[in-house]
Length: 67
Length: 144
Image 1: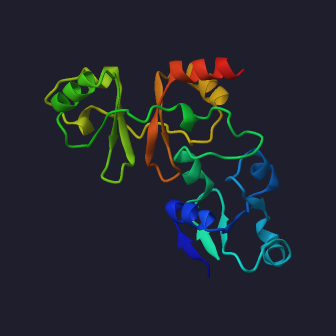
Image 2: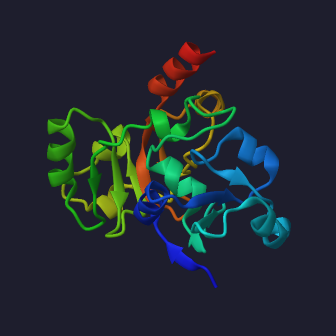
């Protein structure tokens, strides 16, 4: 289970080299996303994590909100 | 692995930079005024009137301890009997708008419904600011 974090933790982790991943549909990602984030749709997250991300760096996933 | 639970809406509500095709375009959150006066339900309207007047505003958002929007005091409500509480005078449960709504859409909606202002909140209802119609229209014209 991923650890739930807030905005300040996100900023700190990214400054330390964490990878940001947006799981919303691509259209929403293309419209606006957090700086430096990559797009991985939720249904492809497991395969995507293995293929696209550096296993040595923390990964921060995000959606639109908590609902 | 971490989950930024509050997500993109929280990031944008905080006014932090984003990337993408729509990044940089004005939205409800970027144009809303964050210094709108607020008050609590049980405050006397007399006290609220003084504070709002001193701040140079003609509106006040009624919030609870978590800054969740409970109601709105526009000029008409602020002009009511000063011995009322904010709760008794306010417009309860006003329509609120999400931070990412494009300013063009907001300007059009506010004109169509003749809204002088509108609270902008997170999806949890926490106040971000008050969008003033003139500001929305000006931002839309500038960016059109």
